Image 1 (cartoon, rainbow, N blue to C red):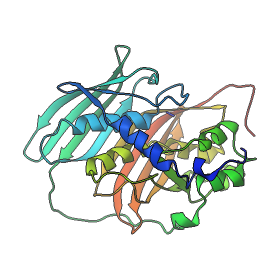
Image 2 (image 1 turned 180 degrees about the vertical axis):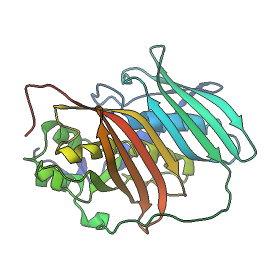
Image 3 (image 1 turned 90 degrees about the vertical axis):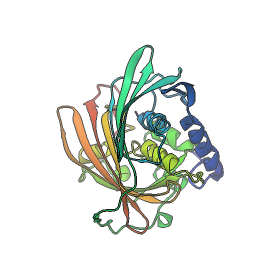
Image 4 (image 1 turned 135 degrees about the vertical axis):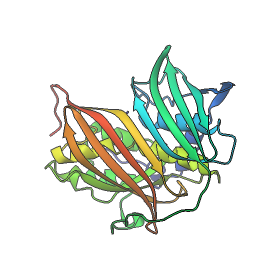
Length: 308
């Protein structure tokens, strides 16, 4: 769920970032087939399986489209059961579990080849006033002070695996800027924590639900990778097998996914070939807007080629 010289329009700060974002928005615009039944497609970019964040985002879209009242998603809990096939559409079946006075609950199943590959429960709530408090955002450099994908690749081209370099060459719908890149320079184990600025690589429509779906998509990018920092490994290493097992996202406050958000992540535990990771999303002014948690499969893969 998973280096060479090139023009600036191919990477971070690239002019085709909006095109990549528009493609993502198109992927999230599911085709309605019947009441509570939708169909989603996958990008044809050579993946062996569907990116987990895509399924999260599309499943949330399916759930949103069955909630008639002006209620906003506040939490989702998902399980990845089987790897998705990127060559065929995914069917999303929504169960309207409950519509109460304040909350609505939906259950979504993603289906391929006649089998359920993913399940998710989503809870929606109407706006209410109440007590307010939140964690403080850590003090980190601003995103503009950090290297773009292009600058990062130019700086680390000799250190990164070929498949990571190939990934960075493709225009991405989300701009990611790590606060600390030292783990790419030296493979020594470090405390399993990282902070990454991210935002949609262009402008999104003024639809709060769409911004939530884009954040759900982006929340799966680097979270499980955080567990590897303690072992001096990268998610692109050939001798590591990673797969998301479950994913939870809590949406605390309104935000825009096309404005910079700081994704602060840590991994309290890894054991039994599983890693557990947590994340918090902050706006530039330090407002906590969302929290995430994920457990994933982390296996040592036997291979004749080991990245050193």
